[in-house]
Each structure stands twice: as C-alpha cells, then as structure tokens.
Length: 289
Ligand code: MN
Ligand code: MN
Image (tube, rainbow, N blue to C red; front, side, top):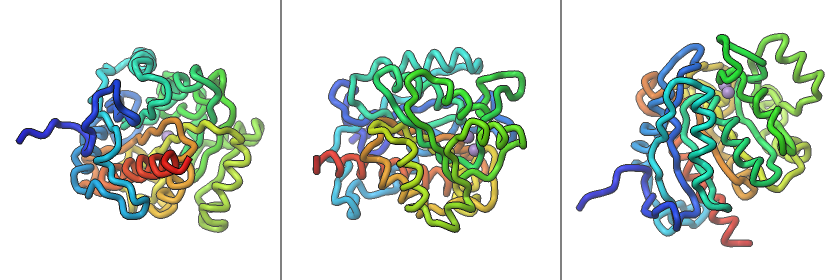
C-alpha cells in the first residue's frame, strides 16, 4: 500500500545491493544558473515514468538489487562537501556500483578519489566544458575546476573527455600542453560517437572506468535545464550509445548539473532514462560474464 520514496525499483538495503543510488545535492559554486541541488529528487521523480522492464537489454530493473540511500547533507563549503562525499562512499562495500545524482560537477572529483583509492581507475567525462581552471570564483573546488581536480588524483590511470565546446584560451592551452585526451562536439558530429569512443577507450587503457556525465554535454534541445547550457551539443542518442558501451566497464556513474527549474522536466527525464540505461547495460554485461 505504501511505496518507499526514492528511485523507482530500488527495493534493497545497502548491505544486499549491487547498485546504490546516492543524491549529492550540492550547488554552492554554481557560476550561471543555480538549482542543481534539486537534481537528485527530480531524477528520482522522473524514474517512476518508465516500465521496470527494458526490452533493449531484456533486463527487468525490478529483478536487480538496487538501493537508494537518499541524499547526503553536504552544506555549502565545497571542501567540507568533498570530505563528506568521500566519507559517505566509504560505507559502500567493494564491488557495489555507486550511481551519484548531482548536484554540480564538483561532486565528481571526491568520488573519483574514493574509487582511485580502491584501485586504479580511468575517468571518462562527457561535458561541454573543459573544466580545467585551477581556480574559479576564489575556490579550487568550483565546478569549473572539476576535470583539473580529477587529473591531480593519485591512482588516476587515464582520462578522456568528449563533447567539449567551451573553455578559456588558457584551458585549451593547458589541455594541449598536457597532451590531454579530449574530443569536441564537432569531432562527434564529423566522425560519429562510436569512432570517438574507440579513440577515447584506446587512450584510457583501463578496465575500471568512472563515468562522469555533465548533462550540458547534450545540446540544450535535449537537455535545456542545466547550469551552463551550450548549443551545438551531443544528441540523446550519442550519450545513450556512450552509456551502452562504457557501462560494462564502469565502476561508478555520476550525472551532474541538472537544474530542474529551467524546463518542464525533460532534462531530469533524460537523466533518469540514462540511469536506467547504465544499470541495464551493466547488469546485462554481468549476466554474460
Ligand atoms: Mn562540468
Ligand atoms: Mn559543463
């Protein structure tokens, strides 16, 4: 009669789960549109719009061990939020797949650091922005520094980003000096997402991948409700294909930068659908192995 609030099909407790949904409603370094703190609950609400059965993977999410732990209390200081996120993730047993719902992109580096402490990890970022600033808005923990902070993490085995179309001259100079692996949205349009993924995977060269989706990688036509929208982005089909191919190797997922107040729910709906895509693709791959 009563349905537990949380993500759809999340019927399990933490100790029995294979996938753990965690909301990280942190947005205090936001630089343009604020409100990504409402992202986690908007994605959860949208998750009830779908069937539990996924015909493409022949997987029923209701048969999988999914837990929703709720939202972490992260306050407004990004340094404290970083420590809190790491502390929260340390409660998960090895092998459990965290599905982190942001919040802004600054929730990703502490999560990567946690995963890197468990064993080498490579990071694939889907983002319109390079996020390579060393500091922004008087803090090194800004969402505009997310990839820069990820690159400093010990145990990082590889890094690639896809969908790039925005950054300062200094960020692009830094990326080229460091020989960073990044592909623009023009590259995806010209060469196709599969070719770009092939190239990125070659550069990543690792078996454990952390997948970080900044929703603004999508064109605003598909995902208008983000903090820093950038036209000429990826399609929902491109991102879905990336999830299908990366999920089998992924040890964690985050979906960040959804600011629900800026649309009629389309962006959270796509985010929720991508969570399902990730879980179903990962579960299907585990069944086969
Ligand atoms: Mn970002
Ligand atoms: Mn971005």
